[in-house]
Length: 296
Image (cartoon, rainbow, N blue to C red; front, side, top):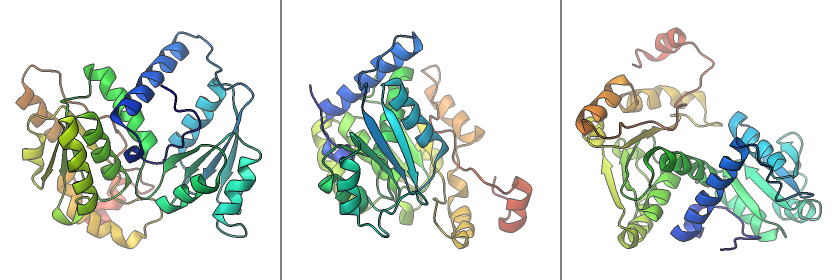
């Protein structure tokens, strides 16, 4: 299978077979790296990394991967690029395409990365937008496959705000790859109905199921994977914190929830939580609870 020159903007653009190919290739390259086997498949290439939203992990993973594959990488943050300001997205795409062999974008609206890909003459990869985060899902699904030996049939539960990039991309990925997906959140934090309908049509072909639950205890029963994400995304105002903490405190993945899932499984492979960073805060726990009340 060849995906040469394909952009990677969202999982909806890829078939289950193509996603499986990417996961198998990732597993092969990971094994070669661990064994110390060089795999500089892109020697002499160069990639531009546009980060309108900063990230420790995403930047590091793209830069290390580029280096391992023999590519040079140029990091452009919001202060080092004129994208969307003095230069249009279309102009930026054309200029960068003349210098680089690929462009990664991490930032805001999905329409930005789609427009980049439309005007670029090289592949464009989505490192995160408000709506989708497909590269994160590839990493998570690789981890799940390593842990369980499979993806199809895995009982996957997402807790928290399921309206944005992680909830959307996980639902799409599970539908594509035959996992049983549950979004556990208050009703107003569930995914967009139009995307749900699209994923239900995909699930009907792959054997996946989609469930939407408001009770964390019910959602955790029989789960193989428990997953969560931040309650307040980068760029959102501090004014939303109190509401999110109030609405989502019951949807934490904590010792009690893990214990419940493990007790239900009783002897099977224990559940695990692949996303260990549900919230990174500058405030201490004491300061948070002083402002917003007890959160655990």
